[in-house]
Amino acid sequence: MGGWILFWKIVLIGTLAAYFVLAIVVTIGGFYNIRDFLKDLMNPEPED
Amino acid sequence: MEDVFSTNFGTVDWIIVIVYLAFIFIMGIVFKKYVKGLGDFIVAGRNLRLFLAIATLTGTELGLVTVMYNAELGFRGGFSAFHIGIIEAGCIAAIGVTGFIVYKLRESKVMTIPEFYGKRFGIKVRWVGGVILALSGILNMGLFLQAGSRFMIGITGVGIGSDVTKIVMSVMLIMVLIYTAMGGMVSVVILDYIQFVVLSIGMGILTFFTIKAVSWESLFSLEALKTHGSGWFNPLEQPEFGITYIIWMFLVSLSAGVLWQAVTMRVLASKSPKVAQHMFKLFTITGLARRIVPMLWGIGAFIFILNAPYLAGAFFPEAGEAVNSQFGFPIFIAKIVPSGLIGIIAAGMLAAFMSTHDSYLLSWSSVLTQDIISPLFKKGLSDKTRITVTRAGIFVIGIYLLIWGLWYEAPTSLWSYFAITGTIYFSGAFPVVVGGLYWKKASRTGAMASLLCGLFSLLGLIDWSTTEQFNWVSEKHIALITFVICAVVMVGGSLLFPDKENKIENKLTEA
Image (cartoon, rainbow over all chains, first blue to last red; front, side, top):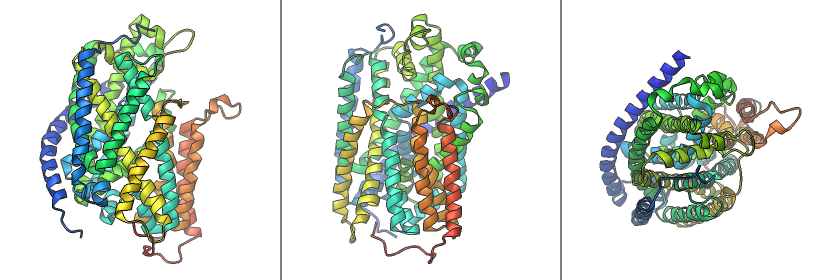
């Protein structure tokens, strides 16, 4: 039982840490992506 | 019963919720002006860059319903439920590293999976595939409104014995219908980004209060072993899970990871095949978090309720009807999060509810238009007509949700209902898409047979425990058998009935 408990603790802490770092990166990066996204929609490139 | 549903949700929280939802609605309408054609409406002009793709995918896949069913899994199954998240993350990571299916799919420039069937196997397969996909997806959505209603009742304390909650959820659904019909995928993407940011903040707040309320040590204490045995930590010994369930979860995760329409739409909306592939690598983390974090809240809710006699008596009575386990999570947060912050949580969750609905409404409506209705016309439909039909489809599906979602009661847990209705589609579609992309001998007969055999999983919606001879059968057995049958008929049908010409069809109604 101790093995399972330790494993789930590692999974939980690792997930929380990784998610919140990624959330910050995606929030900032996503903001700039939206700007470019809307520009592209107004000036579409021809399809390949 | 009144004490069970007491809450910290007050007037301030209602104001926060109303202001935020109004803001979301207005933003959804504003972006209509960026929709210039069908490509913009359905796949956002194929302009999604990496971070926005991640945000919108997470915003859709981390909806209120996702939170509710994962919290319920944690509440009922404890840490054993984490195995579902790990399997799913592993599958998503493998897809991201290898580009399995997603890379070739993005290269093909189709807008839906059935469109791919049409290109590869012909129009009849496309049509049947479209019907099955729409059936699966629309059935799957059937319980979204119910889960949302239970969240509202649990967190606000309003709605017990009245129709207030149903009215509120219906109003929200109507708002979603309007902005999705107007702005299509462009509105969906922008609002998903906003939801992602708000949800992430909400997740941080909730996790903090969960650990504060029950303590880190209590979460991992052996207290739950008294009620659940070692299955609380070991998924192989958890009666609801076990090895059959774990294999089913692997098959569902792998097939859903590449074929679930809401995910596929983001793949197809990505700026390039490489962006699509990288999106999956990063989605591994958000995909894992969307499972594990709500499960943690469910576990916290269980521990909290177990240690409060008036709550334990309501959820685990010795006699009489128990409060539904779906209420565990919202009732828990209603009691542990202070007013003000609970309004932000509720706003985030309700916005997540809307963001899931907008994506799925657009997904299934697009399939109805592109793959079921349009192929019936010899000359096809113009882009303008397709947009109109898609918008009409959004409203028709919305009406179904209002009727079905508020009175149908699932005979099983929320997640099992979603997994089995999804299996109707995944089980047949997975061999067809894998065969279509990677096996030259895959034939239309094999594809048709595989898709139709997926309907076998409808038997998983029946409660077999009430029968004498088959009371050992459950949805996990039906699902697993269906996956096997579909793979066998795909291979067997293709070998026994090869196509006369083995090249991509060009004489179809144009997509």
